[in-house]
Length: 343
Image 1 (cartoon, rainbow, N blue to C red):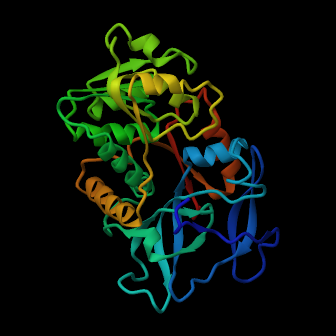
Image 2 (cartoon, one colour):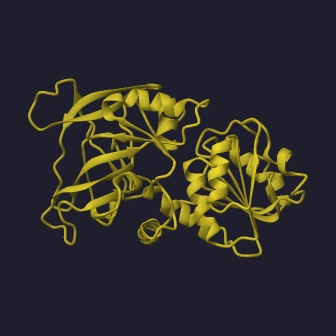
Image 3 (cartoon, one colour):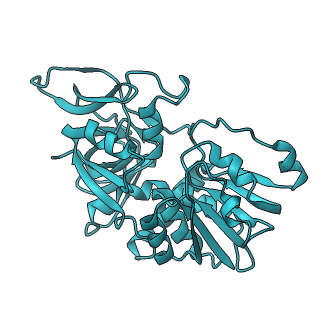
């Protein structure tokens, strides 16, 4: 966990009538969210307060919602949410450069299904005033995506496979296309996601018939030797085991996804035998995270990365349970949901 992670203070009640109270969403137990009242936080001299507009439902939120995270990561009750779009509402007296009213995106915050959060200047980046609020929250994933692309050492001679074209996969496909790989192959179980990936620069798109189908079962005829770079962008931990089977000798396996519980056997002998390199993607130094955050904003502002086209629903905070149920429905074709805290 990053040393500069900011977790929302956790005290709540059912009394919304008290002065200085805000609405927050509470995960009471797996699969059950509800609204509660909490104190509006005050920033310290070195912090800022964010008035939140939108928060995305990330795969990590979904894993917590399902109760599959281990207790050292989350206990119940809990507050979720970290893909933030909002405004600076209050500035501590020691903070320089940031001002009230500035539009911001956040990173390394937690507990953001709420009207307000506090954090440090490290946790925010200012975006242009004319930038659409709906497009802001997903900028949060770009530091990890950009780091994944950089770690892959992709160039015009490499074949790349991205498994999964959900939110992260679609953003990563756009980023990797800028690295000009020889082939950029993507997979997913849904036609709509694959159509978007093709639009975003994928050279070949393959539909996987079922979530349990091994990827190479579909791709082995066209790519019998596997790929130079494999990046799993699926939530399930088993996607890591699948990615190992997709690499050619000397391949890089860059773990952007695979954050869920893995119930499959990992063949570490194959890792050694095939001389595979396995890399995790969260920036390891604060300065790198800062740099990737800035770069990600520029890519979106300059129109090179689209973060708004696959937002399918905007659900008010009062219907947070409905939003999570919808996002958790594996039969739905929904890609991304925003929670509107102001509604």
